[in-house]
Every structure is written in C-alpha cells, then in structure tokens.
Image (cartoon, rainbow, N blue to C red; front, side, top):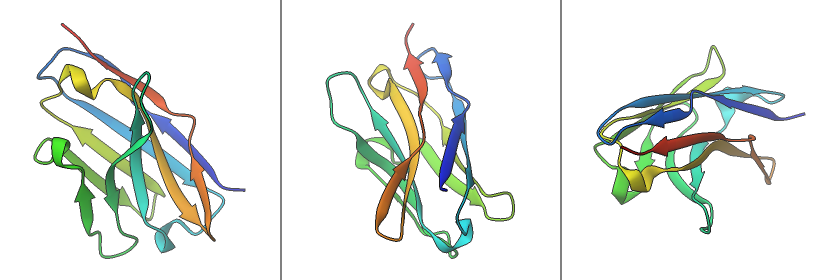
Length: 116
C-alpha cells in the first residue's frame, strides 16, 4: 500500500532554514506528482509546493516563493522541501502527499516550529 514517511522537522528561529524529506513506497513513485502540504493550528491544510513526475516542473504558493524549494529523487523515491528564511507564520505540521489512482494520500506529518 502507499506509504509516505516525512522526516526533518524541528524548531528554528526566524530567518533560519530546515530541510524536510518524504520517503515513498507502495507505488511507482516516478509516475506521480508529489506535493508538500501544511496545516497550522485552527487552519485548513494547504498545498505549499508541488513537483511533477518526470520533468520536475514546480509550483509554489505565493507566500513561500523564493524561500522554499521542492525537489525529488526518483531513484531514491524521495521528495524534499528545503525551507529558507523561515517566518513564524510558517509554523505548521508539514506532510507530503500524492494522488494515486484517484485516491489522495498523506504522510503522518512533521512539526515545523519557527519561533525566537
């Protein structure tokens, strides 16, 4: 079955950087677009960044453009999110996700906290 396992969250001061990883299994990773989502307390989950399956085309929500970078390694079946210049409003649980055969999957998430 589809499994997504995130790692790399933590606490960082404003202006700092964190890198997240998501290891995928149970499906042909290279065939599917992957996304990073976040959910802050009291808010709905939102798509932060997305990367296409092969060509690697990327998309970002406006508030992270220029600060976050999504990438993938199809051989390792891993998708990454590099987050720079972090702000307190980036605090959330971050999870990776994909749609496989019309079903949406997310990992368990990893906490990112940005505070002084």
